[in-house]
Image 1 (cartoon, rainbow, N blue to C red):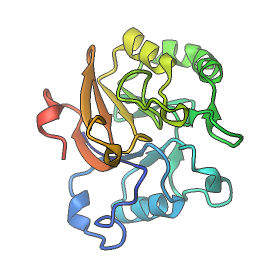
Image 2 (cartoon, one colour):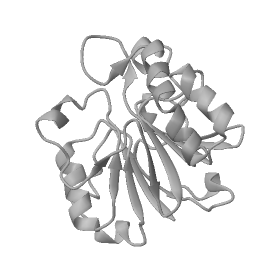
Image 3 (cartoon, rainbow, N blue to C red):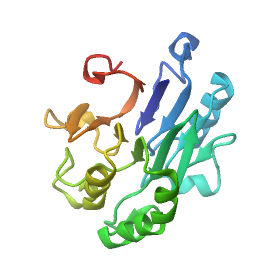
Image 4 (cartoon, rainbow, N blue to C red):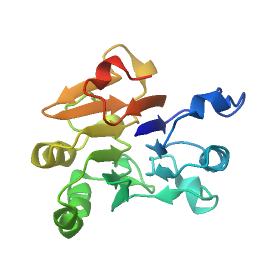
Length: 206
């Protein structure tokens, strides 16, 4: 399965100068948040493949302008062609507003998913907006990652962890790719293409 993962910045190649060849062979599109909802609607219309998304901390506009034809997977285990995808959007709470959570609040969201995770026997891809704590996150509160995400990786050992929020343009210390235990961790800032079955995705992320 070939997945186009996107977050944080609308790609000019995909939107302003739409190049349909970039979507050739794509089976699924996943948004990790902080994108214009009209961008997601555009992609689902032009690609004819499912577009899944979680909310970023700057996605309050989604209440008025929802991404038409797309599927919100926040607090869900969504199964696509046998691949189990867990969605947990939002960032660390740093000011009043939607899609921001304390560590305690995020842990409460995860606890509510306990039965679904048991029924699905875990998950293959974790999709979030924020990174995990001490795994290429930021030192400032807005960009600090969640400890409970690390706990999910340790318990369920998914194949992939996709997130955004920490822009690669912030500095050299922020990686596109990392690995934690059995999980390939990818910061999908703007866009990247992932082959789900790839044995060594580090060498093939586009």
